[in-house]
Length: 239
Ligand code: UDP
Image (cartoon, rainbow, N blue to C red):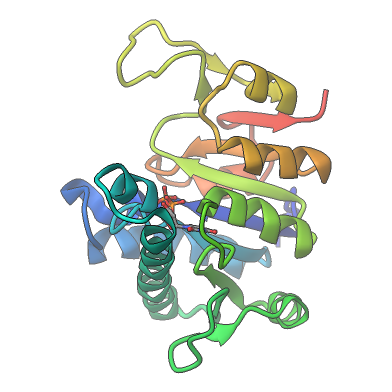
């Protein structure tokens, strides 16, 4: 077995990643592609906790901009993450990986309740733990849920999968001359308002000294490269 850079990581996937080219809902083919990549590193012995967003189905803030009560919309967003978690669980199981979905909102017929010590035990047994329903609280995002679970599960890093190669000085989808940062500090991200994760998530990562590796999920093999210690994307850490 090759020596991995990490033993335990928290991988954050946005809901949009699961939508494929449709940009909405769940595209089973995209789910299988990512499941295969996650399965590969899990089978190399990496302990993986996953947090999956819900933006491909529902975002509370977007709904509140159109008049819906914010907290109500946020609960709907959290339920959306559970559907994504079940889809990814299915994909991972098809790859022969043992998994557990653990939900921050109690729904015992579909998922275990999130209990930190149990989650750690699952990780130690080599099961991929899929953390669903965000933090269980409105007014948060799944990025913050990722930082929270990463801290409490003692992961060594947050792997933040995105649709671009890392963190840029401006949006690379709109500007051809956007420059990629290879390294950044948490303070750089906060003070320059760089779009990595929201500020609550960045602060939590900073306070707990959790490096954030930002990389392109759509480049095949990238998850493996990151966990093997190759320089991929951007790393955000203390100064
Ligand atoms: N959400 C929430 N609390 C949490 C996590 C998520 O209320 O702890 C809601 C919120 O409405 C959010 C939605 O769930 O917009 C989907 O999550 P997010 O937007 O973070 O998904 P992503 O952008 O990663 O797909």
